[in-house]
Length: 464
Image (cartoon, rainbow, N blue to C red; front, side, top):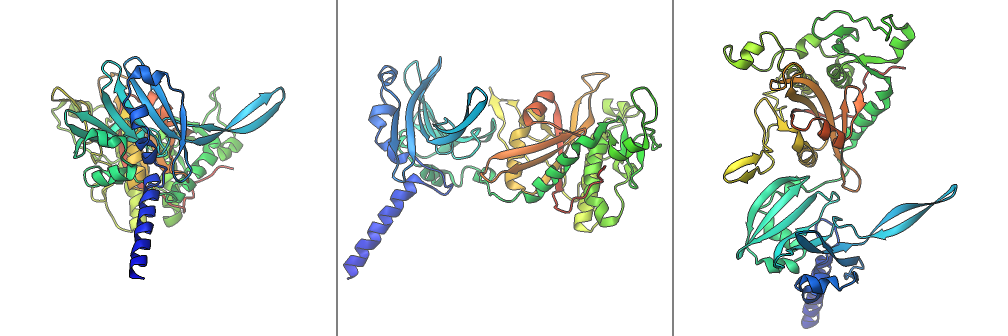
């Protein structure tokens, strides 16, 4: 009996390891068993041999179908081992539309494995493992001599770069994702890419409420509601009379149905939707314009600041975030003591000839390069669920492009959907803007981020 129990235990352990090779802790399919069967046929032959092959299909032991195929460009070729997915395709025939399901094998789907080799000598260049619902988040390994290095990439930025891994590069041809994760669990920042779903309810509630009100906004420079809901000039504190295109006062009905706000006033409207329900009145314009920076009086910025407000939107966002924090925490604080500045260095900088050529780090009182903001917001969504971010934009002034000033501001609501795919609602000046449009618009600028806790108790002033 003892021998039978031992034998059964060994069988269960063997079956467990077998299934583990086909799935893993990320609950994505794995092609390790398939790759072990194609090392000599697909992963090591020369390019001319591979060109004679047709795409091949194999099932792993849990029934997931993989496609094995060759792709090439001018300098390199790759063998793709990609799992089956399905998409809806609309077939149009005259006036009728029929939706059909089609099988696809995307190169960057979760569970894909790709080997790249050079066309010149056929040498291996890198192996990529895709484990995420976002194709621009992946793990890659590179051979250098007898050593193997790992990179973890998030939306084009390196969360880790050139991390030494103590296995031969050829071992990656047959290694499962769970194995490589075990090898790198202490050396790579997996906490930045481990998505936990269903944590973004309040974020989505707030973004949805803002979306539902967008049609009521009209942009008006220098306009904001004060703490009592009166439309005021931010810079003079005086009442604002809203006029139409012909210079005539708008009707009372229009005033009741529309918000006339600047970009800064729009962000205040959002934060007031958190603050006012708790204390009965909104944030004070005067408090929001309190400076949060000091300049050397004899320096360039110190001289300029005597005539121009160089940090308007930075001060505005910091003070707004502070107001929201004080409501949530019921204690007095400022942006420094409350830790509201986002100022961590989450990525490795790109270095060429000993010099930093592409910095993704935080610059004090300046923020982050807008070009890397998508990767930043991805990591923040993973590590700080249920927070949103007020962004002060630093860019060349309208008077002199070389003089960088904080004029514009924006708000970001990063989240992951039910499938674990990253998304981000972005609102600016009473309008929604896509991530791609935002990155295009502000390429070369900097964005300083302030944390604000998302809440379901969000009741902004709505126009009817």
